[in-house]
Length: 239
Ligand SMILES: Nc1ncnc2c1ncn2[C@@H]1O[C@H](COP(=O)(O)OP(=O)(O)OP(=O)(O)O)[C@@H](O)[C@H]1O
Ligand SMILES: [Mg+2]
Image 1 (cartoon, rainbow, N blue to C red):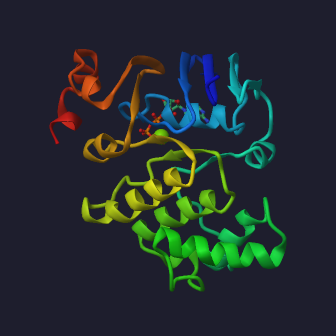
Image 2 (cartoon, helix red, strand yellow):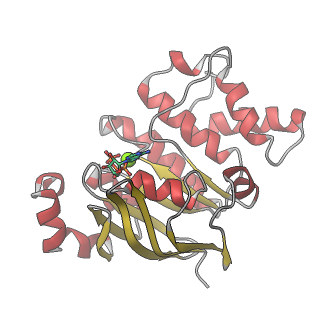
């Protein structure tokens, strides 16, 4: 049984079909990369899987059980968590507070604080525990987004463009954090535009264009796929 099954999932916003009958499976241990041009429906798909948006039709199953309509905080307890593409910051909270709050999903307060400090070190934010998220660099904000997810001790994690806007050198810290998470047993689905990064991390890929899945396969198969090249006009795939 696949860990996650997305079965003919559709989402409309008025007349726009943002996600159009998309199906794919994720097995335990996969790092699935999802790519597609801007507005393709990737973030909407994540919101549907993680319970942040209602599904119009189709079904999402996690560990064999239908999860349509299950709210995000229940899914987090079951081990399914998402990151946010737009990094959220919280006034008057330190990075430690933010990550400790996430850790409360599975741990009592004192333990949650210790685990949050440990998690911040693990993702490369050691020493920045008392800074406010708003004062962090873009790279560190992205790492904080990863740390918030990691602190919930997920089995399954959806990462939405945690490397967008970073230089290649700056992607090394999040790449290490993702590898670490995977080594700890998490199954990962990541949306990323940065092809060299996806090529290094992904074991499988799914390509979305105008709300539809247009290709899936290994990273090597995907960069050779003509439909994918057409969808991107070649620009992202030359790197
Ligand atoms: N809440 C919403 N209400 C109306 N339309 C929406 C909403 N959210 C997304 N859309 C539209 O749905 C389509 C898919 O958007 P989505 O954010 O899922 O794309 P994406 O693939 O994540 O793009 P990007 O690569 O730019 O992050 C877009 O046309 C977008 O404008
Ligand atoms: Mg998006």
